[in-house]
Length: 267
Image (cartoon, rainbow, N blue to C red; front, side, top):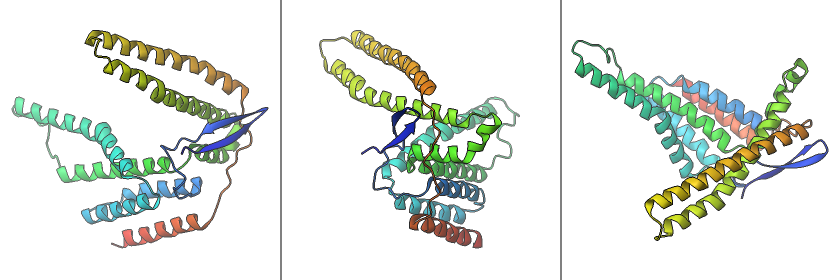
């Protein structure tokens, strides 16, 4: 069940689907501001992993908070896959290219002083930061993040920096993107299934039909940009709902993080 939260605008009400990567009601609720602070501190702490034992401790702690936040195994697999595609694969391509060049050109130094273990440590640390950020956004409703950011940066509006306006723009875009994704799943995928199941159509005809569906989707998305612009012009967020919350969940999260830091830096 997707979470829905109502955001009040001047003169009208606007329903925004809180983007949280299929965030469910069973997730443990922690204040968005406190969770962000802990996520940043945890990301900074990952840079102090200097040996294999540190990596093990850090990995175990990430596994614990992942379980406590009730994230699914699919979430972990998606993060591993996306990290591999975005970071590991390009790096391996560059490494293989350097190796090939060093073999082709005698005397050329492409892999001089290459330290595999140090490189692996850096890649793992980058993954920790990637995973921590992903875990934060996965378990935090988007509207809560926007509320918190507006609360923090609201004084910048008086300095001529339209923070609230930009946040309003982001919310409108996210709402339209959510609608586009829903439409894509319901309409376009269904049309694609019919095309592939139709044995009377040749490969060329199927390709043409699929391209027509894609063109129609792009045209519809371009039309939505006009709707976004109209909403941005008509709607202005002035009263955000975020207030710092300290409850049992926040206290447990802070205490557990402090215990981890003491244990981590003591070894």
